[in-house]
Image 1 (cartoon, helix red, strand yellow):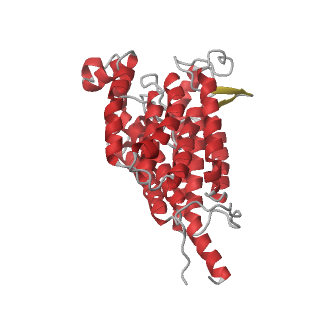
Image 2 (cartoon, helix red, strand yellow):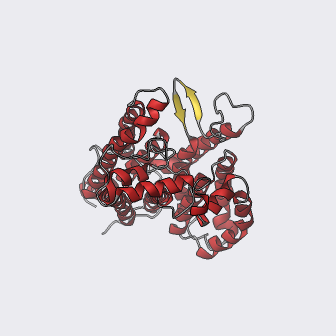
Image 3 (cartoon, helix red, strand yellow):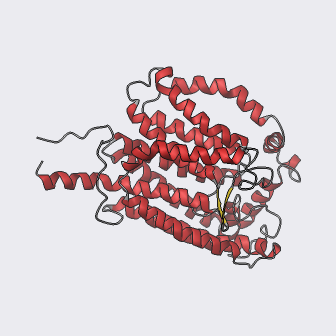
Length: 397
């Protein structure tokens, strides 16, 4: 008799796998793509950040050394998450979400400036001592995906009802998103909301509910976009040439960098935009620096590597034996996709500047660790079918 695999999350926590990153081509492909992105990112980070470091009276290798240490830790996190059976995350969903929410709350409380100082008009980083700085909003992306996937499994069959299906998700998402908006960090709030919506939709949520709620959120969105620098950025997006020296300066310089690169680039280390013309060349606009120095060929390499991770991630979702694994993989693949495409679209001037990191390439260790954990979990989901099948064969069922 053929065993029936339940769509629900198994109640018993399985034992950790005995092997490392598992069998099959999907885990190996994911890890290879990540290693290539890390190596390519570190090389370009040095080129993009060396002049910036010198202007700050730091060694030219300052940023790349810190990022290399973060990359080494990220690989450890990836392997650990790959070895943890993904079903464990269903049991950790609420604790992870609560810890994330507590960190986010610390950022916006009026008496916590000592550990969450204001930097460039925003409070987004926790200073934990010993030079350790952490950005809780990055963890929020992973926490919302894990929690939403776990609850979506339990809510199957209730999504036709707005009050019993989607409303519980909205309440918890709001508890996470509101502190992010108060930092302020509108782009991350959009990503968190988008990831939650993708997982729920994949789990059976109704498109009509999202359209209805989207219409209701228009006034709030208009209010958030209707003041300060956000208005200036939207106006610059609509007419870049008229604002090339003002709110559109970043995007204008980004397009100059990309246009200068041509097909093969100006050469590694030969880019000019990093010499004070393009703000954040090592972070928010590192894609533009790569386009300048490596040209269209460098851009194609990035796109191919990200497409590999994303498509393999969705293939893993399609082959997962349990519903939780399917939704978890969909959310994590979408997480990497949203970040990569938004970063590139900003560099190309297709959307207003959002300050989204390029996964595994931009400087920033919080995003690096969380993204590595996401890939590790994808590897864990990819391992599960063959491990379950082997277990069934061993028991003779």
